[in-house]
Length: 106
Image (tube, rainbow, N blue to C red):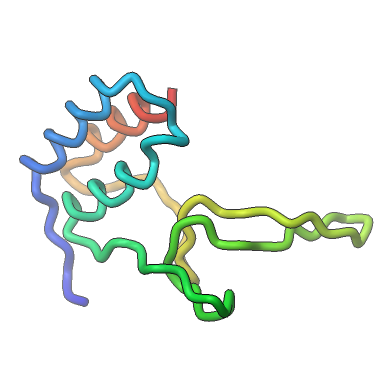
């Protein structure tokens, strides 16, 4: 995939929709992530596969959390992408993204 281009119009529409929704995070987060991917020109998450080790970029990935005492707890990650980490946005749309995140996560 080449360099992604941010569509400011789509990003502004997503910010407006998120700000006005008033709905719960649980009910809206997948639509939010898909809209954000589209606005940023990125691929959206894939359909989950039966074999968990093939789920490189999906919603609700099954994981085992390892604890210091050696025990494990089953859990899920809302939106998982293998070998990705989260970081603070540093593109021209950064302020819009931060407003959108605050609107959707409060």
